[in-house]
Length: 205
View 1 (cartoon, rainbow, N blue to C red):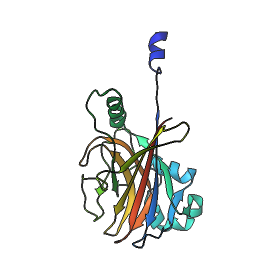
View 2: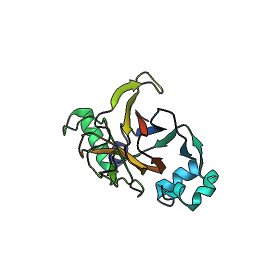
View 3: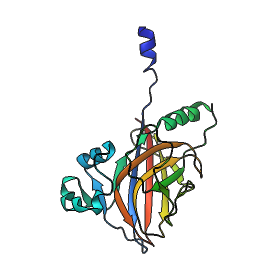
View 4: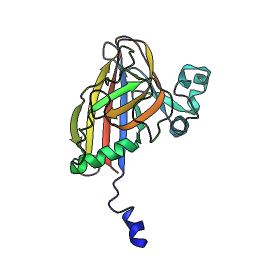
């Protein structure tokens, strides 16, 4: 019994997945983006605060939930499918492809472990799709704690329509694929000519 209990935790490698979003206009100038504080982030992840609140009457209370910044930084929820896919990548069993595809969307339901896709994925033209907005991000390794301990993916979505982006996810196929991580966040309102740059960092915590 004691041995079985210990085996449940032996070799445990929790993944730490975070993403930074930068919003730019057609000239490449950085546009202000709302950064949730711990309270705002917690309420959104619990599903108790809609990602669209920044567009409504609660906007007048924005100081309670965060602040305007040059970039937005959020942690992600690792999905059950993502955990299984990560195990496959470690030993090659199952043949999962590498995770370098980024999707964006307008879904507002809080991220859940059972998620296998974004709530309502959109490409830059505001078309509902399963073909991710960034078919292949630029991959590299960077240092967080020890040399090359963090996988980094950087990609930019060229927006050609008006919409409120409220979610993002990391996939391992250009269409559909396994969803490693998903998050929802306060709306980023984009218009034709804008771009969103996503920088994902994945580390064994």
